[in-house]
Image (cartoon, rainbow, N blue to C red; front, side, top):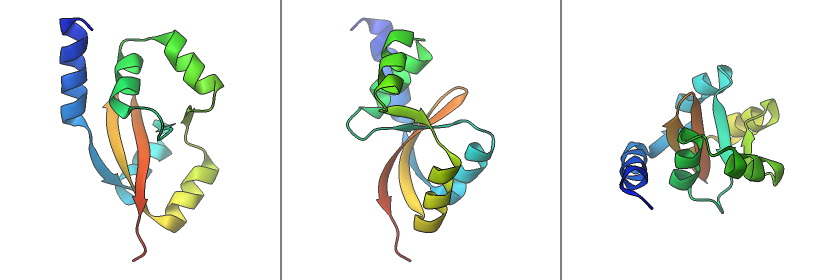
Length: 103
C-alpha cells in the first residue's frame, strides 16, 4: 500500500460514522445509498470507489456484496429503524447496517 492509499484510507476512516435511518433517508431519496455487505471492510470498499477501482467494484456488485439500496430496503429500514456505519465516497453514501432499535 503506497502513501497516497494509506492517506486516503486514513481520511475515509476518520469520516466514517454512525447514522440512523431517519438521517440516511434523505440520501436514499436522492438515490445515493449503496449497501456494503458486512463481510467487507467499509473503508476498503470506499477507497476502491474513490480510486475508481472498477474491477473490484464490479466483482462485489456481481457477487451481491455491493448494491444500491432498493425501495424494499427502505421499507424494511423504515420499519426496523436500524443504525448504520456510513462513509461518503462521493457521490455515494456507503452503508453497513450495524444494529436495529426496538424503541
